[in-house]
Image: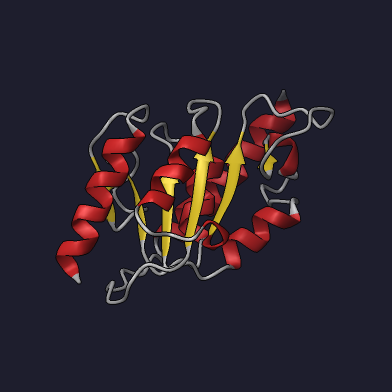
Length: 170
């Protein structure tokens, strides 16, 4: 219990430092690659969300997903790369290699698909090398370039609004 408190403290400290270094890049090109960061503790329809992105013309191989689960179990097998609090060391650093690879990948667009401020998810969003970041309005406004005001369950509306705005800035 105490170790989890220390982990959370260091994650929040790292997040605070990263928020000061956020760059607001201008989006000027077509979306080819998408990083999808999902909180599977709150949203279980990630396959439907991916299908919705594919229906908008994104190739399946250009969508990379990383999921977070608050009830992560190493004994359970997951259909997509999933991590939990156990992949954070006592210094607040992420130990899962696939999450660190996700952070360093330069996506055209990062979709932070979570509407509850979870320190680890916010830290991943802040550290991401994605050119453009989109998320929900209920999460800190400094993390994402665009925020869409919908319910997390309404993934079709989220994707529709996202691509409507992307078309308007081309």
